Length: 284
Image (cartoon, rainbow, N blue to C red):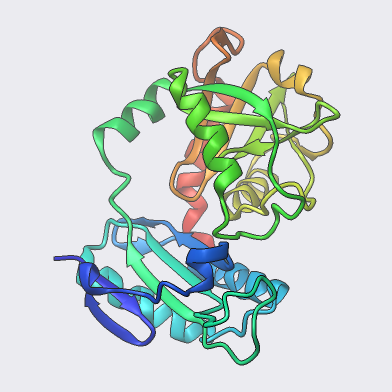
């Protein structure tokens, strides 16, 4: 029986219930983060918790715990639920009896934690080994995608539309045809041996795996990495395209909108990056 954390209590997940007036439920007024787990250990837990704290401050939700508290909650969930499952943390502004769009004052945040299903399964491994086939779409999300908000309707719509066409993910571009990110991933392209990814901005999430990958390649390889604007036409003609996220690590895109990326296989620089990431992911 899976265990969840709710406002200071550990209880069976099916018994963890929130108010129907919770602003996370009614307005998507909340922040979340996901900490990956491998070999029974959390990867870059401190960086994920620090991002959670920053995002809470950004939207004016009082942070209910310090980093040590969060670490303790995560450790307990790993102990209770198995040490191969990512940990999900979420804080909403709390229940507001007035249901006003502008929240009332002195609300008590709702704090939630639980374990996600293990990503070490046959389907995920197949995608890792064979590469992702993705669709593309215009980015219809709001203008603060740098905040890891629970309000993910636009991302869900774009991803569901791509999956309805048989794709595994979606890559997004803005109205100027500039690459932003994916439905739940950051995106990298490789051309002539140089790795590039869009610079941080309000239009994309400052992904922890993105940060780690750039740092690892810069410190431990001769592979050049650039953070720059990328026209979507460059994505379509790239030698390699990668996706990165906390649950996926770094993976290859082998086709976009049904057309192969280069030869339609995982590229050599991606394979080198995977090895380096696996070697150094515990450094964070």
